Amino acid sequence: MFFTLIGAVILIAVFFGYYYNKIIVLENRISNAWAQIDVQLKKRADLVPNLVETVRGYMKHEKSVFENVTKARTAMLSAKTPQQKVKAGNQLAGALKTIFAVAENYPKLRASENFLQLQEELSGIEDKIAYARQAYNDSVLQYNNIVETIPGVWIAKSMGRKEKPMLKIKEVDRKPIKVKF
Image (cartoon, rainbow, N blue to C red; front, side):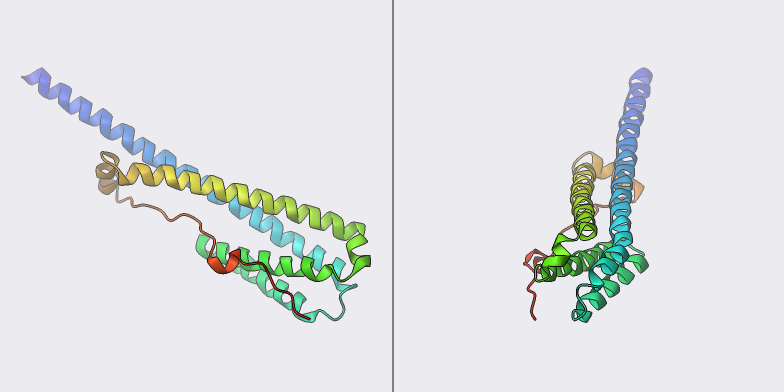
């Protein structure tokens, strides 16, 4: 009887330890995935001044485009929470898409080596952001599966852990950008 009780206590401790560690590891993966997104958002924001300077000489009549890009970049750099950064990052991406759409009307700009290089760098960063968001959501999915299913839900509750939100793209951000002159 005594050994059975000791065995049960050890089994429960091992069980609790396993799930406790799994939850901590998954939280760390989520933090890492967010950090990767943050790095790419910062890289994109850092490229914007170069892009604006390259484009400004060609697009003298497109003042509102530059204002929108500048506002979006400022919002991106001043955002504090992940939600604010995602929202500002989406605004910046939209403003940059507008620049590229307007650039279609400037053949010399489109042929500029500087512009093409910046456009390629931004495209690469956008791909990395998309991949990092996917990795983040995959990590959140694993975490949420543990903290929402039995027996992990009991351990998570004792740790004060709850499910985490996934990064989602708003319906507005899915629509193509309309450029008006």
